[in-house]
Length: 116
Length: 112
Image 1: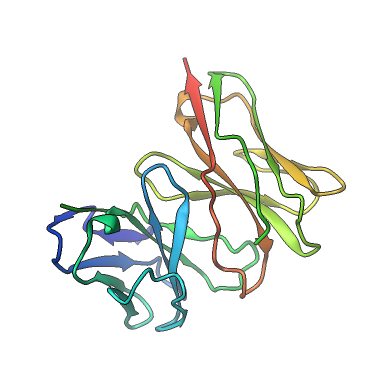
Image 2: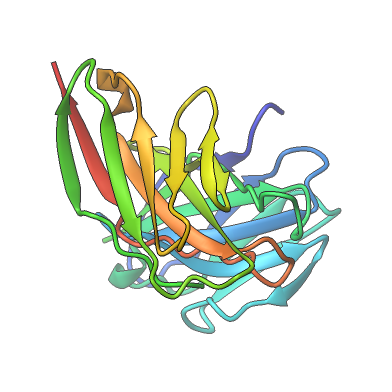
């Protein structure tokens, strides 16, 4: 596709439910990133993939958060037993590689998660 | 990543030039300065990157003084569609520096 896509665009769930957020990176991009953005705040790094492996999971807020990437393409961010503080916009980005000339990351439109 | 400081918000009018200054006093020798733009309900978008002096592209110009402790993003003749949050980031172009550290950014509001 032309850009990074994410689904769903909006997700409303009840506290305690599990949710899955999907990211389709730009074709050929080997690096993939997940960030979280709370209202009016900057971006909070969550996890980084190089290919299918995640060398850095240091940003995941708790063990309720997990992510995987298959086939060096699609990635899924799963939040188990959601809490109200998980409400935020979850952004996915991809880049040609971790070490690129500009480190330019291409962002998707995000998934707005609301936990009631 | 080097800490950056930029104004919380700026107001402007259509056709004016907007200059946003970012302070990064502890920038390292191999750090570059990068600016991203974020429109409402969208992910951030890379605008421009520079190391020293001046960089210009079709969107903006980036001015970096000799001491590199600050930088200024210049948006020429802004329009209503330039209303967005602008983020200043400082970091090295290496595989170990992939975590983009966005602060709160500068909210630029362009009025008619």
